[in-house]
Image 1 (cartoon, rainbow, N blue to C red):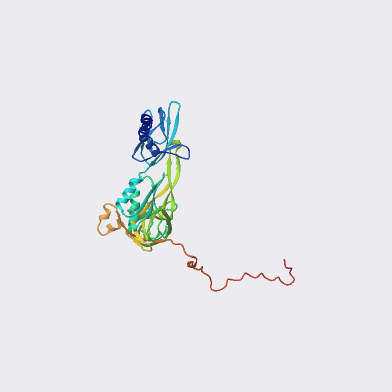
Image 2: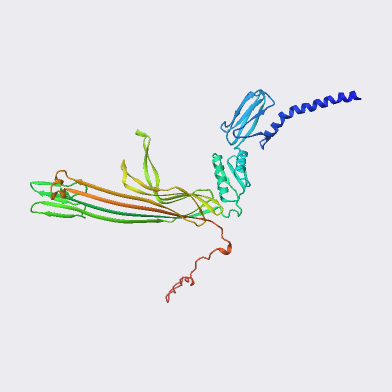
Length: 448
């Protein structure tokens, strides 16, 4: 009896030992692979990690659809080493002598490491991390705005290749997910210019000519009439002696100007989405493409005017704004002429800043000043140095310009109104005008 028991125990013991030897090999495969909807086994691993895939046949050849996501190499006749590089899903095809098998390799971004980072940096906060192929999602509840914003920044820096969706909730809840930005852009431009110059003309029969510094337009001789003069600018002082045939033109001009511009755009943007505004226009720029006989001119359009871009981030009642205002205008004085086209330059004033405000608070961007002072002088050599009359052979122009720009920004959270909060529409206190009465037909006329 004992002998039989001893004999029967050996196969059972051997079976137990055999299972113990096979379990370490089979268990990791069950943890790494699964079956998806396409009946392909899935191999899941983390970016920066590796795993070994075992097959039931000798591997002759393998192929990976995107080596940038995951790469594979045959290390043993029945083992394939898979390296995860970046988040995504790729296909791995394995060929044997007569067999073929396909796997879906899923590479995660390393959410577990990010989860551990949040637990160390924010103990006691309920921050959960979820990951898919294109985005990283933060969910849970936090105690303050600072924790919510800081967790979003850490996730963005850690996972720069995927979009981060911050759905962390504050104790009071996120009342609004939209921001209306009230912007006031004011520009003041002051100009002052002074010009002074003189030109001499001689129309004597024996000598005809003129002298000028060429800084300003001077009278010209008209060939249609003998000794005639043609003026291009009548805003001058003209002196002429017919007996002597001598004349002088004095250019004396003073200009002053004041320009004011005010733009008040109102924009609404969703949390984390960019909104833009442009009040201005576009001017054409010719671009030559090709060369020789195949050259062609195409037209590109460049924007100018008052432009604004902003991106809000809402954290409870705190709004973090990334604002970029820009004001540009056309400058034909510094433009160029290309193949008959007059292409102006652009005068641009731009600012870009990050600011954190509460609902209804305002901030101003000031100090965008532009001062211009220009002095132009011209003279005729030698003649301009003659005492007393030398000033006649000189001319000068002075120009001063001052531009000041100021931007005032006020963000407001957009909140829906209850039915009893909707304001009434404006109405006239009196009744509407009655419809016009048709005229009565005259006597003896038939009414149509």
